[in-house]
Length: 545
Image (cartoon, rainbow, N blue to C red; front, top):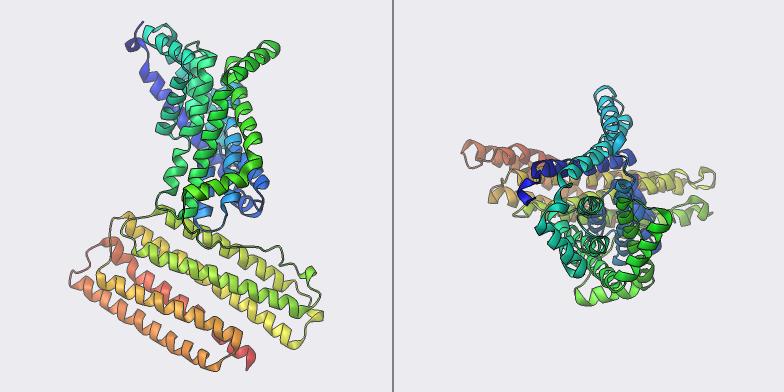
């Protein structure tokens, strides 16, 4: 028997199905859970232990520690999460990812084809979104187990290949070979679940010994950090620190695991003989034991670990966006005047996030290459804007009207107007970012004059937004007059830029199809943002005069 006799076509096809099954099942679970996953991450990670639970549950749901880590780094890059908060989620993801190996260990391949049939049938004839999500989960689950059957058939003869026997014996005598194999295979596939699934098959077919499998699991934990590293490239200091933390934690875990390799092996041998654990499930159990034990040992030192990461990745962390809506509860403020003071501070915070996102949109527009991570950061901040908008609106509308003076009632109405205008500026900023993304995706660009026109409008908007809030806080009539002038200037800038754009198109100076198409839309969105800045000042003027 030689390597040439192995049905590598079956193996590769089965591996492709396996990866597709994981993605399909994860997408179905993610879609079924909706946006609640991100909400829970945002809401319940104020303490590292909360992040640990969220990271574990989220990864178990979406079946991908890589996806959980990437989402977490996205929050860190956007300034919505601290390094300590991200540490809990990242460590929890290591535990959550063990669920895939556990599912594989259940060995329910006998019903796999029925799950595929039921799910596919439902996908064709069921229209409800939730039902379709469940159908995708079933199809993905079925494909995952069916692919294991296909790969098992292809690899069944591998244990008879002399070269592979020599490799398996090398792994048994030199654990570092298995460790290195786990790192390389997982980095190549960017999925520890997939690489561990393959090693489960190897072990079940008798191609490799159990003592050679355990280091492979350690290596898979290190290899999966490649996704976090890639997600942090081009990011800020906080994002790089989160990626390094992920790698450092898994390396520490691997060092501990290698030190305890033989005790763990003897423990699993005892458990297997006592409880009759099936081969695939043995891998799942040792994977769970390893990750849970590592977490128990390292988690108490999470603050020290974060301090160490800050030393090896120097730099100034960007300002965090502290989104604390817990204090926005009318029951906590018997005095309406105090409640309105808290609401105003929240409005200032909302204005700050809107401004930051507008600046990020301008930078994304001017970027030479498409930075998808930066666009994701913009969307993350938009989520924070919507969250704060919802919280402030609920807070103001639940204030008791019986305890309000006429002035307080007018201020409440004014603040509601302000929050909605700020939220609309946030929406329009996302629109501009999406148009910029379309240009980037098409490898297109604007002319230098077009970039200059857009940037001039952005700078005008920043001035208008600042002055609108200065007028809102100080009621300075001069500031209000400035804003009216600025709005007229912005309208003229939009008109002139649109006219210049069409001239460039006629003169064949603007040849990019996508850039030509979206430029006028971007101008329109920027002009409308100016209207909303002016609305804030106008509503304040009307309420006070």
